[in-house]
Image (cartoon, one colour):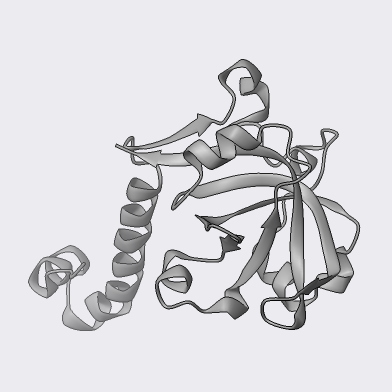
Length: 178
């Protein structure tokens, strides 16, 4: 967003005063724009299970951050960087899901999926998921919230190394854009 210099000179009297405030006005304009797009009405959160809407949506997650009982909401970044720190702990994570024939993955970004940056992903084990059918029906390609326990010691035989795995217990939500 560019500020018209003649307009700022008119507000502040001279060119020197205007130049002092131009970066501030630009920053305020950018912050206003970012705030506007962050509350855009075209973004909706849909519960994975409509009968359990109390578990879905940004209003109820992360529970631990609001002082309520429940697992903490954790970014994928520290889980990927230091999976041992989270081993055996229940967490809520958000990321982009890809469902494959043999492998389900939670990615840090859509670009990571597109360019197959496997260092930006963890594997999803759905064997203990209570609403597995909703996960397979809705999650693929979307930004989703998942609850589960981190297993930092699982050997992935396909790639021959230990990788972090989210043993998912519940599919919470998928973000939907209209």
